[in-house]
Image (cartoon, rainbow, N blue to C red; front, side, top):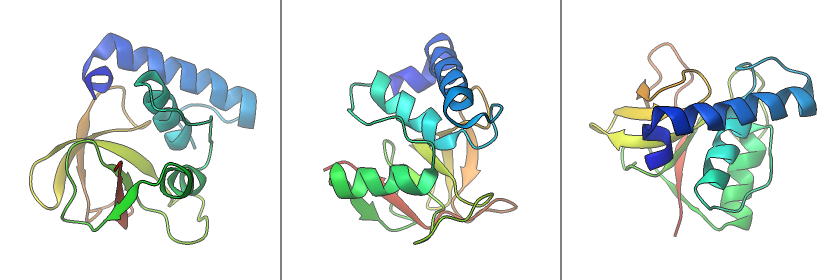
Length: 138
């Protein structure tokens, strides 16, 4: 989480993710970059995850391979990964992000591919896709 709170370090994570995103998918940053952004952030923090370009696939990897547990909305805390994904991919609605700070059961400060610095997000969505669950390392 310190990486995400340090502008120069987080900018580097996003630069690497943007370059990898184009190489792997030919997409332009930040479009469709949330999974790769988070994967790169986790890698930089010493958590072994592969480069994954799909939010649903990264969430499944963290849950199934890394054995992270699902946490209901409202019980999230700093360090959790939020997911808007359902059981199947839904392009344009799926999103994955890191919670830096829980302000209440709905309001959080997060990092994702959408902005180059931490910003507010509501678990309920309020104009964005609502978060369905959180993942927490055990």
